[in-house]
Length: 281
Image (cartoon, rainbow, N blue to C red; front, top):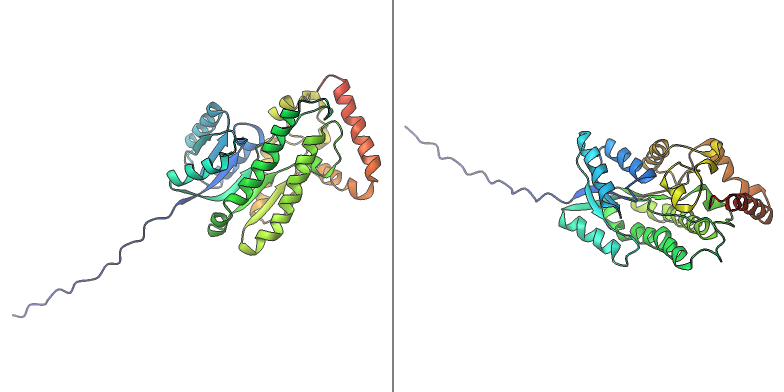
């Protein structure tokens, strides 16, 4: 009786799993940022939530986890710190994560004449609205390319308008619009989507911090944070350069094309003067 010799079968070792791709959402503790986090989670994205208020982030993370989606990583962090973006990178590496989407929502505004507002507060606004956003937009591009992801930068319809009465805030949003539209073209050949979200007024804590009264929002331009976030997500996934939610907001951003700039600045000044004069600032 012959015996068959068993032949050894070579088994190739499986390569170690790579870092898990995530969407990083800044300013996620409330408003549009929290709404964007919920939308990304519903669409199956793992999340890293970044903001200063740890209690708000943990509550949102628990809500998302309880809804059946994976619990996000919570990263309480002041993005105006010079080492903030480096700390985001360290947190990703320590948790086996890699950036697939960057959602730059963190920011704030102030109502008042630039020469009368505290200079340090206005410079802090530039640091958050401009410097931190620009650094986050560029720090993880290689990872975004590897994971076929993208960048969603939250600007505003005011990024197309002159801003007497909120001069520094309007200027920061103009920067966000310009940078995002440029990066949309530069990074497209690498497969990285870049979309700028330009909402009109959205009822959030932003108005209170900026010094705006709740009744100062024009109803025709106002949209909920949830609807704004959903439209932003769809636009990003479709590879759009710009998302302006709402018909009247889309009309508003076209006004500078047809109205003399000086006249437009005077009209904006009148509107803001009424807010400041009414005590809403």
